Length: 109
Image (cartoon, rainbow, N blue to C red; front, side, top):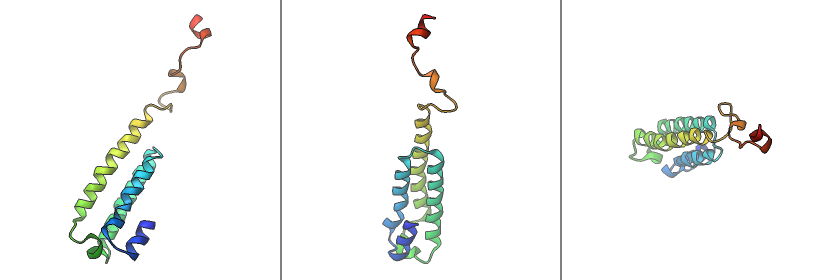
């Protein structure tokens, strides 16, 4: 919402790059769904801004394909990193008991 407000008040290309900052912040949560949702919203916002009357002021001579490609090149590795980060944590597919060392009583029998 802040990005849209800034785009309307001062339409320059760096305002559109706040979508990438938002992706970076969402990566800190290491949540797959939140990052996919943020990427989809960023794509929708970029497309809406490109179709808006501010297109000439904001994007000057940049193609929407270039902006979309940059978004995908950043979002896809970040989304993949959340999947890799989850594999080391206990979850439904890997119970916490499988990763602990046996106690003295369990080792003796």
